[in-house]
Amino acid sequence: MAEEFKHDLPDGMTDWIAEAGGGGITRLERHIARREAWVVDVTRPDGSVAEYFLRLDREGDGSGTHSVKSEAKVQTALVETGMKVPAICAWSEDLQAALHERMPGRADLDNAEPDEQAAVLEDFIQQLVLLHSLDPDSLGLDHMPIPATSAECALGEIDFVEQFLGGMVTDPLYTYSLQWIRNHVPERLDRVSLLQGDTGPANFMFHEGQVSAIVDWEWAHFGDPMEDFGNICTREFYCPSTPDEGLAPMFRRYEELSGFPVHLDSVRYYRVQQFVRSIVSLARITAINDPQMPNAMNWAYRYICERATCEALADAMGIELERPELSEIEMASSLEGVVVQNLRDEVLPAVDGDYPLHRLEHATLLVECLDRQKQLGPDLASIELDEIAALTGRRADSLDDGLMELDHAIQGWGTENESEVLCYLARRAWRLEYLWKPVVDLFPDRKFSRID
Image (cartoon, rainbow, N blue to C red; front, top):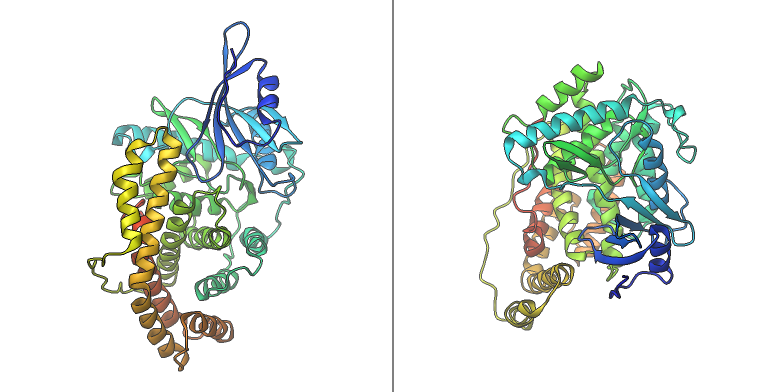
């Protein structure tokens, strides 16, 4: 029998789900993730249960290559190839929604035992080899352009995220890193393949020592396979799943199975590209502050990714960075602090349900961040103005003015002062992580795994 559930899904969504599943909805739970998704069960008249994973674009029209519709097309094409991807059980053009087959397993490879991690990563690499071996012309993905040159491979996604940002945020780190990406396109391109575009730990499910499903294909596109290795570095940064020797054994195994080399200079380039793609996208998302979004996670990802971008650039350029000393201080009593204590002591214990609890916990962290901005922000802004003045020769009247002046200077300098500017941008990124520490601590002590 169908049940009534509290939800904020678009009108007509539950009727469509029930019709597509051939029964009544008996489970409807918001999934805890950055992109909206729901866990859905439909119980049929014969008692059987169809288990789905609902993905939707609330404001999408299905156009372009970064959408739920594109993801559904990619998965439908890949099901026929032997790739371990969830089948698309139903698609609604009107609702821009897809019902995915719900696969067994979990995604937290970083919490698995070392033996299981090794077995799962072996299976994952075999899947990646298969993906990259597929003939682009045979997949029927006509909505996706197939790049012909290394520059088209490297810059296509960057062009997209710059257009997505639309000038909403100006930041010297973004200007610096985008210039670097355009000036250092890899010369080598062995082949063009279908890429997941966001591949690696946490974007595949595993069960009993094997990959059960590779998920999250909305960023899929054709390009240089080395980009997927840049992605693996990025995802490993957040979900460390390799032993002390890092990613090098995985890369060597790919070479053995595929017969193609992994070019580490290209991997370093695409590691930068992937983090820049992230920070530019996150800049727009955090500028909007949509209440539907997981804002605490987005702010955390933004500032962690900004620091990681600087570190990835430094590694690619052979530059040593020096982390500024930042000691934690005792915060003064404040109204924001009172609100945080009230929420933690009185409200959070009374909340039922994983998703509401998750949302309230993260809202509490954001209030803590507002308190830190009020109490620590002015002193940190003064440091920024002093260090910007050392680069530009003028101390601006406000931090916004100083950042704007540095941004304009970077555009004019080109490759001039490259090392000095990056060292400053890295210090600023560490200070921003410190300022936003309550949300940054959702992902503490993130660092790169070795690739050589």
